[in-house]
Length: 114
Image 1 (cartoon, rainbow, N blue to C red):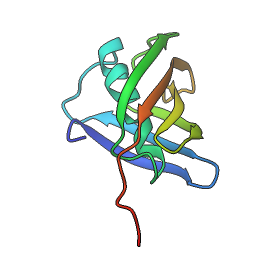
Image 2: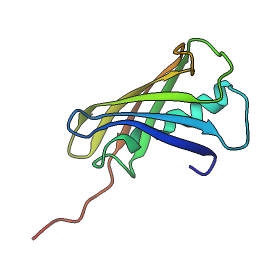
Image 3: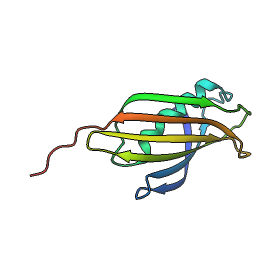
């Protein structure tokens, strides 16, 4: 997380949706590796998925325009008792689609109440 400056654009927990602008604090150029690191933040989009352990993460490159800020449009598609599934679309500042990703993960155990 320290590698990026972040700006929250949309947070809708009920819809399982979050949009966040990311920028490399070290000025790294846009690369497949940089985008892959950003896709790891899918789990942060919803309070019930934060702290999850990824089972699989797939990223598909679409284009790679240079862009200081990258918009991550995140959606949580399903939250189960122990797993969740979600995805992310990454856009340049100019609105060009850069990559698509999906993630399945195991949610952290929560203490039982009572």
